[in-house]
Image (cartoon, rainbow over all chains, first blue to last red; front, side):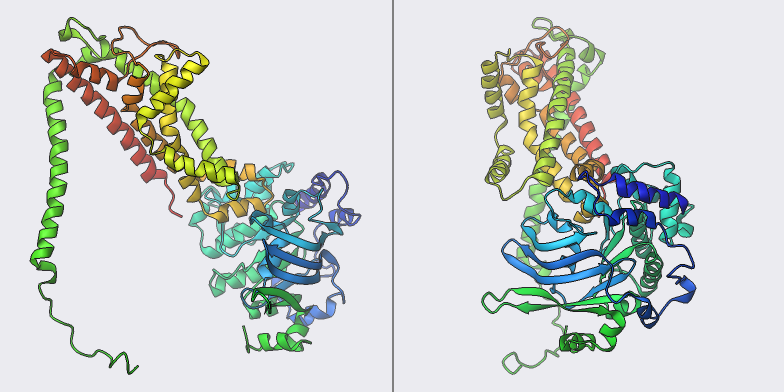
Length: 321
Length: 298
């Protein structure tokens, strides 16, 4: 663990490409390091908490690592999402739920500028990371993606060995590395995959099962020391056992990372998320285009137990979507 | 439901003449005849070339120069070495350029831009341009820059132009076969687009690129027209020794020998054809091996 925490500090100072610190909270984030066992959160795998337990320990307002202020997202002329304002809390798991086409994945991909890769995609409003606008003209999108990692719907390991999959990230971002072996072991350990693959690190990642591949992708993301991990329906291609392992893993990762997950599975949101945001789509009266909007955002227990908005209740109870 | 009628419950109809009707059999026979005609022509060519050329397929063919007066001892040494020089230079020119152009068009070019669309359309057309046109183009180009047009470099430029569209197109197809998830995974880790191409996309596409490139080079190896148009020498009695050296190649040599009246030259041409076919077969086999062994099925 020690190798990782020192490198966290390096990473957070060395990678500010704009020449100034990202924010004053940056130093805070750097010194944060892993939360020691026995500190504020202590949910080992043996004490998986129900949302109710956690809800009582959550701050009333999320301590925003990433904040959206009145965000609209367009694909060329088409307005995919409108008026999204919410804070994603540090060391929390936030779930984005809603029917298909409500823009939740679009919002997720806007948070680390993966939408930049789609021609014509643009964002208005402000998305800030520790107070700094990630779409600011002086911000390098590469830098944003290093701090805010992403795990995709379909496991997408590189066609290389397990070892090379993990080592790739630290190599390309130019991390100062004392021992790549240690990083690989640490990342795989944190992703709960080490014991299963430690004897076949040089074998192709394609030989792993779907669930193992997805944990490898999580390990790969962890290896570059992000602060936030975005997960776009990470379990939708996995069976229930593999899904359950990923959920346990998320619960452990929460101690050190901020996780934002898009899911179609409402039970999954209820099981893992501290807070849940419900999106839905509204058809425009003039054009008929369906534009996503944020309906309600609250502590998960409240969202599933006593939602304020009737649309949330209708969706959660299975009456639409 | 009523308009569709009742659900079909009748037993399946017994097989009628369907597959054995005279029309079906006639069609099948036509197909077989077509295949047979093609195969017989090919076999005839191969067998006659082999029978005619076999007696001359000896060491002298590889070690002796051609001769105008004593065909009994002439060989194809200059042509074989010339082919190697020209194809080697062509590979050095065309492969880096072709792969780079393919990578740009597939990974970086914005398809909305008019100039990229223009390149796109031109590329498709260039691949279909007759080889001799590239010879004329190179002759003009050589004249413009004051390059002697009968040298290895000029020949290699003509053949490079000829196979460049093919290499670009196969590179693009191989890159397109690499799933977008690989690129996204790399970019999401904070890799730059250039790192992503260099370390993920291009290595994954390399078997496809290599296969296409070898096939393109083997086409260049068998090509005579553009080199003849450049005034390729038909009689060379020295080893080519550089880019500015005069040269002949196997197809040119064969062309020249078949035009001679003496019987010995005809036999010599057949022997050279066997060598050329052997080389082409070797290259195509290499391409197939690479494709089967390394090509990834996503």
